[in-house]
Amino acid sequence: MNEKEMHIPQKLVPLSVARVRELWSKTYNTEGKPDWSHIFPYYHENIVFQDSIQKVEGKEAFLGVCNRLTTRCESLNMEIISIARNGNVIIFDWIMTMSFKKYPSTPMYGASKLILNEDGMIVSQRDYYDMWGDIFNNIPHWNKIYRRFLKRKFG
Image 1 (cartoon, rainbow, N blue to C red):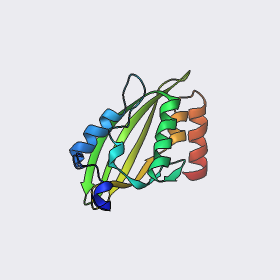
Image 2: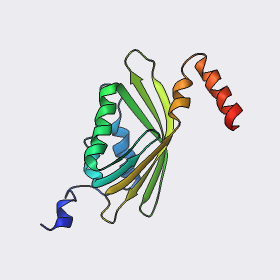
Image 3: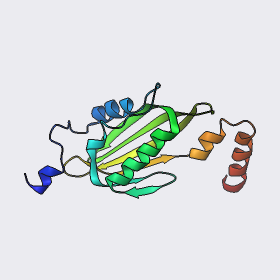
Image 4: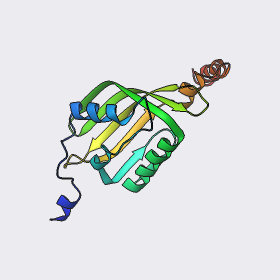
């Protein structure tokens, strides 16, 4: 087996728009902890993941991000609103509802951009979302203060 074959799982169905919708919809659930094990094989060893709060490089660091989120959440549910592919780029927007201990469920609205290499492995994932806005929307009084602050400073 050559080096190229060692990095590519043999039985993976290529990441099409339909396959991403299917896999990411299963990733999150309404009962119990999320399970990403079925999508991890699609990530390249040198994955670069970035979102609103962090940037990590390498599959081990990315798995750490996922495991920390699993530990913190009671449950997660992801609804994919739309998805498109252009060449090696797949972009989808979503609503992710998270439930934490002692706090109400919190919907977050965002989008993910996946970049695939020539072998169809995910080499980059960038998640875009307004974490604080979506969280503050569910906290009485803070929602108005936060929106007023944003409008005064940026709008």
